[in-house]
Image 1 (cartoon, rainbow, N blue to C red):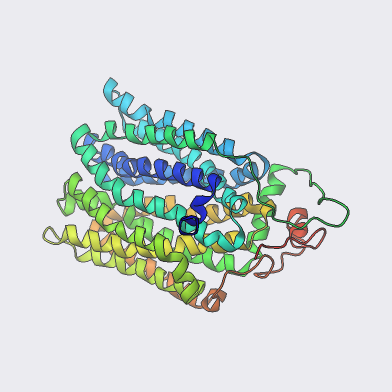
Image 2 (tube, helix red, strand yellow):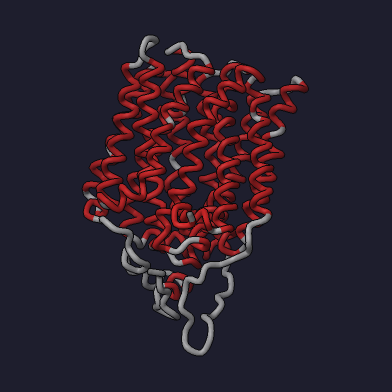
Length: 447
């Protein structure tokens, strides 16, 4: 039984997994309900809906790099709990304002920005925490387990969200997410303060403790380490293209579905839930696919799938809209999980523990910094060339990620590299130099 459960047999990893599962279910409800508040309850324009999505991602551009430094300095468990409690309080403002009759698009902007800021802290803490709980040779398994729970939430959440919006109205449906964050925090409270041994201490005692530098210098250290890794540069470049192109259509997708295809909230939620089975399938099989076909080839094929998934929406009409939305979700969801799990495992594998927070923050900052730009461009294009033409532009841009990867070192990369194999970060700073044995002990990866 223990072998079947794998990492879920580990108490600390299991609590992190349960917390993630509860939180993600509520988040998926809000991902549908919050823009529907703007579309249905407030009846705002497509540009204002796109602006809501852009504002939600703006904190990833502004605060991700500083958050990486804080995560490397502070206890990650406390950061995770604080982020959950903060998001529960902030999201509670939406139903409260609706009941008081003072709900406005400006309040939604404030809530989206504040919740996005705390999500930055939570996500960076969580990504940096996984390598402390999981041996490097089991990172794909650990990330896959966590993505399976998130994928299950993506499958169930939109359908549940559509149902709740239909029964409770969109503002009140957000109560479910606020409660889920409280549930997540309760499991994180009990998470043990354990650190996985990741280094072989030098003869005569443990490795030296490096004093913390300034916020700016530590941010720069993580950025320099990331840039020095050819595989990380290649992977990140493709994700930037995918996020920019994809967000152009994502920002106006609900508007497109409601106003041009004539779908109701319940139908949209059900279509997204069924389509999200692709996410669940991808999370379940991504680690095995990456090992079987290689990290690089897997990322290339998955990136091409993103373009296909968006392109089929261009021909959607009132008669086939539901099923094309399902098909798009299946293709896009499966490919997204192949990219997420294998790409994140690649980043964690080549990063020393002392830099996990900053390097993961750097990757998130680079990869997600284009999302607000893509969202605003999607809203602007929708007003100029129309909703359907904007979806077509998005599909064309997504296909550009494929030649980028074909011209990169990832084209032939099959296995996860060991620490120090992906590129020599010589002279990048004391933490990076010490981690690869330039000025201190060599860190040995397990297995």
